[in-house]
Amino acid sequence: MFAFVAERLWLDFVNSDTSARGTDALHDFGRFVGWLEAAQVLDAERAGSMQRRALQQPAGALAVLGDARRVRAVLRALAERGASAPDVRVDALGEINRVLGRSAGTRRVELREDGTFARAFVAVGDAFAGLLIPIVESSADALILGELERVRRCADPRCGRVFQDETKNGRRRWCDMATCGNRAKAARHRMKLHA
Ligand SMILES: [Zn+2]
Image 1 (tube, rainbow, N blue to C red):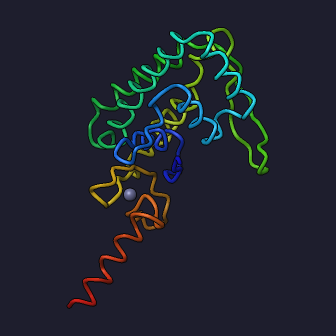
Image 2 (cartoon, rainbow, N blue to C red):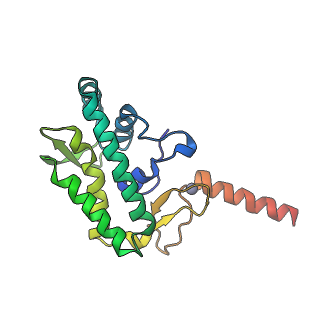
């Protein structure tokens, strides 16, 4: 249901805005938690506890959903224009620090089921506020490491997905070879047949 093709959590989060495909991850709180679980930000146990908490505190869940939409819009601007527009980077920095500044918790490194390691953030107090931390930390890493130059938009104008180009020659064009890349290949093939 959700695609993780961007090589970076924050870019996958930007791509979660796929209302055109009918699967906006921020459609409601339950789906947002589903996305976080699919992205391996939350394990099944924490995801379940978030869902239960949302039933008890619907206003809090709604607030974090609104916040997530706002953060996503700022991160989309950062992905699409951040490399060339300093003011977009400054806006994103303000948003990143706003999110980082208001949640307290414990940082951990966890061993995943597939044997890889991942950073985790276990919030204390307002647990909802901590949900966006791993996402904004991922975007902060992009600023710190100077990665914005390699953020690309899928070459299919109808697609809109962004991704981190990690190829050696820096010429990755498609968000996903299995969908957009394949469509382009098929189109080229058809043109050849008709030439
Ligand atoms: Zn694409």
